[in-house]
Image 1: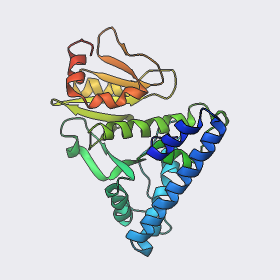
Image 2 (image 1 turned 60 degrees about the vertical axis):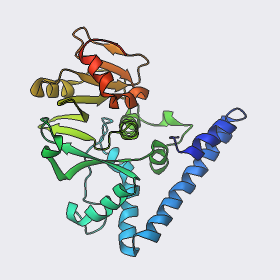
Image 3 (image 1 turned 90 degrees about the horizontal axis):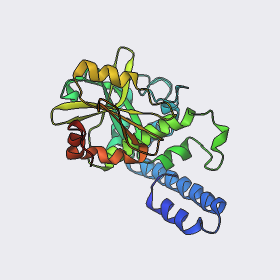
Length: 266
């Protein structure tokens, strides 16, 4: 259901009486919020441009859920707006959404040396929404019937979106992802001159081959895995740190990350 203040307040107020009633009200609030977004887009961006912005916004869940392996892919321009299939034709609308803070734009770097911004391309990026409740509503994920989805299908990209939100809210205003050859890491953070790969795992398996490839190639002393496990675990060589998904926001704390390099707990 996400973390929009009115949504959370409504759920907290009603859940003690009826979970079904609470979720029904949450659904209505999210619907009204999206209607409000679309109304503001139409009001402030011009007729033609507003249609393009709205189409991109509504297309983001399809973009994130394009692959059945549960991981999100980079934004594809073809098919979003009829007769427009290149970055230059959609850049204005995408930049409008980013400037409004409705979407989070995460560039894809094709190398891992710092600064990562030196290895990004204007046309290679992922788009996430600013709230997973808005994402779930646009994707028409039924809040009380998640069992109808393929195991792990929606959880992967919703989890990625959540991590993007948490990292941004905790102060990381420029996120990066990494893709080189066939290896891809969801997020890379830069700390004290070191690039640290972060993999988001939706299932119980915690293997992170791409993060290992990144760490070996770019001499990263730490690999971070975020997932649905409930405790923090460090590998025998202390080079891999597993954290619960809800701890993503702690990764903005450079001193905390540095303590992981030194083998201490905080």
